[in-house]
Image (cartoon, rainbow, N blue to C red):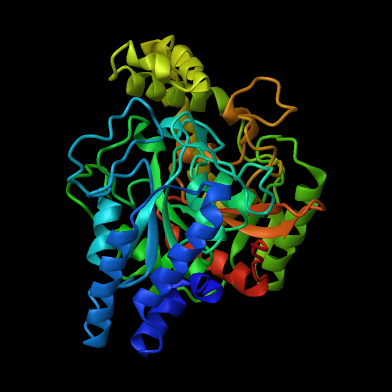
Length: 463
């Protein structure tokens, strides 16, 4: 049963097509994995066992007729509890959201997965409104890292990351407004992909505007590309949605990067990086040279964009919470309440200045990619730290963006970026490698990630 739960989506589809495996068997194995691991790790805040088994039975019947309804028919998936899912409450990790209301809409990504036959298992945990880089909320409690349950899996898509790492589903929807897919991917040793902004449609649109992205979290690059092919279908409800690409992403995943020009920046903007992480990432980068790419060391790529990001993000948080009655706001996570207070002080002139600075960042990165096809960095400067804490112990300023210097810049510039596992610390905690592409080069980022994966098979936790 455990082996079935760890099959990739690509493997599952091949076995379904050959009539060697049933979606019902796989769903039962996955639900068994959830029953085994979720009480300790807290990856899921809602599990729709009956609904999942009904969907699996319907998928089994389609495969028996050789009539699958889409690319992921019968594959178990989860949806982060920030993303609307028909029939399941989307409480966003918050006591402020009433579960007792009609839940009649699917977000575009949920709708696309459903249309392609995916088996929706339930909703994964998130901090309140996705506000921080770890996963814990007043509503759902603390989520833990499967490599060491004393440690955090990161956030805000920590539940999805843990579910992926432990066989509690093959495909997982995460969201990323400053690193919330890539941070937990790095901390838990999985693949997390934030595409070019607008490539994956969203609805309702996030109060964090064009910082916010929806994307795949998986155990393999091939699965990320397959899932991305599904959830990147346009949706008229998203006014930012990009037009469809001529070919699905998994169809062009060849892993060939010979002759590509890659910049390696170990610090990006002068970040301090844990020595074990720095060494592991440098070793990983050498693999790109072995694969035929030309790699240049580029120490400094961008000036610090922390204030620019915080102005956008804190303002978005303040706007989000302003939609709730003042009395209800007493139930907020105290850390979020502090961010909301900071965001409420941001003036129109502050916001316009930050928008101007963001434009300049985007122009600089466009020019940078005239010279380089890709940029490679660490995903995180630190390994996972103790669960139950919002910040690592050595951070002075106590905002989650203070310790995530490699992720949020590419939310500001809207560029595609993926995190891949590239090793373990001496304490046995995963290390992440980030690959960043120019705007709209999602296919190139996935292809480089596939090339690395083929040369460096990923490990999984012993659960």
